[in-house]
Length: 242
Image (tube, rainbow, N blue to C red):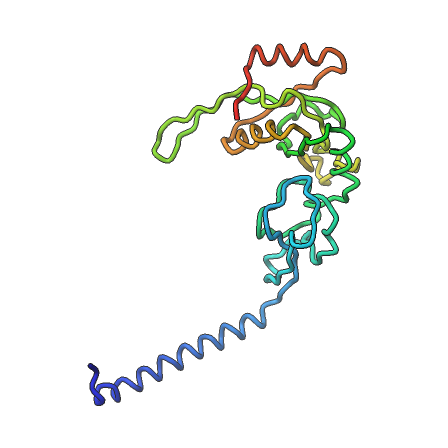
């Protein structure tokens, strides 16, 4: 046990320690109050492409001004009732203007251009650099090449290539958005991604290929004889299993 005499000797040290903590806390609070803040909208859960934002999907947060992008949404009214586009928004991410689109664009395109039950997925802009003539509503097949990677133990993992989706419908391109609006980044580059509608099981295969780092390619299907083209692709490449 600590004697009364020893405790008396320690009191000045303890008192000084408490004062140091209090001073540090006061300084931190002062610095926080002086740091410019901005109100932003963040996702409370991962929001996939095509999801219509409802109450509970987003929340208002206050962040340091220097950490807030200029395109950040500031109020729930900026997002509620709109659909997610331009890539899924992860939980905790700040929502930006390019993340949302009025329902009349992406969601109505999904409803009018694709069969019931299909879902929207995003593909990188480099997926089909040579297909700048492709348009909303066009039908394509989606294929990928085999890829070898290594797991955490250094073992080689082979990711099969082949047909990912027998038939997909183009909803948006890097140059034309899902609402028909022209995308332009002002520098002559590619201003967006491809968004395609596919059956749910094909969406799983596409997501797995993306995680594996496999590059995908689009094959434009003809208006007539599409089934023959798809069968030829299946024969030559096989079908990627989920």
